[in-house]
Length: 235
Image (cartoon, rainbow, N blue to C red; front, side, top):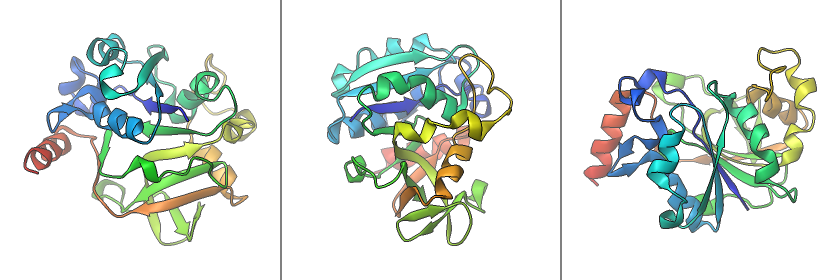
C-alpha cells in the first residue's frame, strides 16, 4: 500500500506563519506536522509516500529529503501555483499511487491526531473508508453521518471527516460526470473537490467509516497550532 500526504494548500488562514513555511511543515511538539504522518505511515507498513505540493514547494524536499529518516521513500508531485483541491490532488497522483490498482491511504497534511494508522483497512469493502471524528467548534454540523459501518450523506449522528482515508482508484472513474462543469474541472490538470465523489458513492452504500474517539486537531489557525504545540510538549 502506498500513501499520499495532501500538502498543497496555500495556508492563507495561518499567515504570517505560512509566508515562509508551508503549513504541513509548521512544527508542533518539536517536529513538522507532516513528520507525525510519515512516521505513522511507516509504522503501518507503507514504504512509499507521495507528497503533493504547491505553495513554497521546494521547502518540502529541503526539509524532508528523501524520507529515509522517517522510514519511507518520498516522492514529490508539484501541482502548480494553484492547488488542485482534494479531489484533483488525488486524481493527479493516481498513476503513481496505484499503478497496480491497489487501494491507497491519503492524509491531510495539516491535521494532527493520535489515531493509529495501522487500524486502517488495507482492502476496504467499498470505494472508500473514512475516519470520522467528533465535530469541532468550527464545524458543528459535521460532514457525514455514520450508520454502523456505512457512511451516509444524510442522517444522524453526524461527524467530521478527519482527513484520513483509504481509497480505491475506481472512486475516480466517473469524476467528470459527477463534477460536471464545476469551476476548475476543465483545467489541465483538473481541479475539483473530493466530497461530490464521496456523496455519489454513498448513494450506493459504497463508503465505509469509523469513529475515532481520540485526539484530533485541524490545524487551521495560528491559535490552534499554538494550543497543539503546548499540549504535545506538555505530554
